[in-house]
Image 1: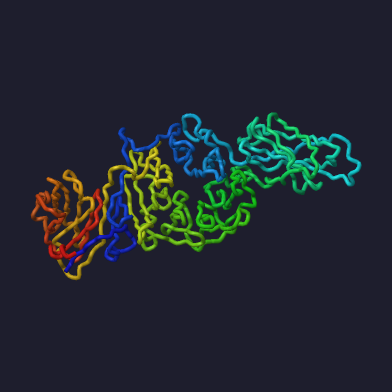
Image 2 (image 1 turned 45 degrees about the horizontal axis):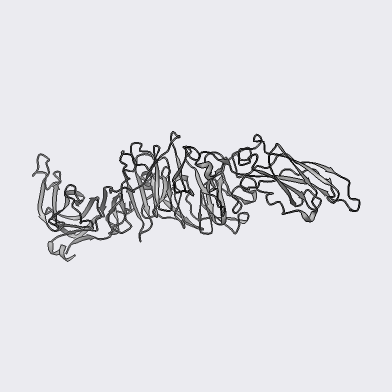
Length: 618
C-alpha cells in the first residue's frame, strides 16, 4: 500500500531539505492560519463602501509614521499620530487618575498630556502636550528676617530655605538652590521668603500655569543647609514672585522634602549628548523605563515625572530597545542582551544574557507577554528573564534569514499571539506563530494598497487587532469578510519503489456552501519534481444534494504530454457530477511526490493513493 495522507499542517522550515522535513511541514506557506492545524486562509483587509480599507484617516500630517490607540473615558475612538517613526506611548501609572495622562518618547524630548489637551480641536491628535518633568527653580530664595532675636534661646540656630515648583496636577519638582544661612528664632521673628515664579522663559514649557500651579517652601530643621528640609507652606502662583511669611516652630513643620532628586528624564539638552529618552515602557509597580545611549533610566514608582540619577544603570553597549518580562527589564543592545532586575529602581542589577545576538533593528522588537522576540543576525531571538535563544534555529538557515527575511528592515507587531513582521516596502510580511506544538513560519502577501509602504502600526491588546499605516489610513490587519488566497506546498514524499499515485482526495468542513463559480480549492501535483497537473474542485448544491465538479489541466510541457498537445493547449477533463471530492490522476510512475494546495476555504485533509481501495482504507 502506497499512499500519502496529510491531516495536520504546519509552516515552512527552509533550513531543512524538502525530503527530510516532518510530514506536517511544507516547503511553501502563504496567507495561512495554523492555529487549528489545518489549512485555514487568513482574512483579507476589510474594504469600505468607498473602496478604502482604513478605519480612520489621519488629518493634518503629511505622512504619519507612529500611531497609538488612546482609550478614553468616553465611548469614542482617539487615534493619536506622529510624523516621527519610533514613538512609544504609555498610559500614566497613577491610581485614580481622572486626567487619563499619557506619556510618550520619540517625538523630541519626552512629553505627556491629558485627556482634555489630547483631544482638543479637530486633529491631528494629540493636540497639545507638555515636556515631561518639573524643572528646578534656578534662583535661590531671598530671605529677610523681621523682628528681634529671642534672647532666651541659646544658642540661636541658623536656617536655610528652598522652594519647589508644583504642577497643576500636583507633580512636584526638585528644589531650588538653598538660601544663605540665617540666624532665626521663630518664637519672636518672621522670615519673609521671596521665591521666583516660573516665567515661561527660563525653563521648558510644562504644566506650570499661572493661577493654577503652586510653589512649596521648605526650611532646614537642624541649622545646616546640608540637612533635611521640611515643609513650611504652599501658595498658588499668581505673580512673578511669591512671598511667604515663616514663623513656624520647628515642631510645626511638615513632611521632609521628598523631591530632592526628582529631576526630569534625559531631554537631549547639554547634559545629554546621546539625545532624549527613547523606548518608553511601563514596568511593574508603577515604574516607567526608557533608554538613551548606554543608559537604562527608570522613574520613581507612580511618579512618572521624576527620574532620579540613582535610578539609572549604564551598560557596556548602546541600548537599541527595551521591554519587560517577569521580574525585570530586558535591554537589547548592539551586543549581547541584558536582564535588569531588583526590588526597586535604585537597587536594580544588570546581568548579561548568554546570547551572542545583537539587536540591530529596534522596530523588530515585540513584547509577546512572557518574553521578547527580536531579529538577531542569525535568526529570530527570544529573551525571557535571564535566558535567551534563537527560536528559528533549525527552521531558517542564516543565509536565507539575512537575504529573504530582511531582519534589519522589518517592522514587527504582536498579532493574536503571533509575531507579524512587515516589509517596509512591497506589501509582504512573514509570521512566526509559537502557539502550536511546533512553531509555524509562513508568509503573507497582498497586505497593503497603492502605497506599498508600511510606515508603522499599533496593536490594540483588548481585542488583539493589529493596525498598520497605509499612506494616511489606519488599516486593521486581516479583519475583512473575504479570505485571502492561501497556498501551501507539501514536503517531498519518497516512495520505497516506483509507483503511480492514481487518486487524489481532499476534504473540508467548509464544503457546505455552493461555490460553483470559483474553485473551492485547487491542487497541483508534482512527480519527480515535475509539475504534472492541476485539479480544481467546485462544490455545488442542487436540490439540497451536494456534488462536485472537477476540472483538470495537464502540464503540456511535461514529457508525458508534450507530444499530445503540440499547440500547448493543455487538456481539461471535467467530471460532470461526483458526490465526493475525489479525482483520478494521470498514470505517471515516479519515486518522489508532492502537492500544492491553493484555496480560499479551510482544507482539512489531502490524500494521494495508488488505488481506490487504498483511498477508502485511509
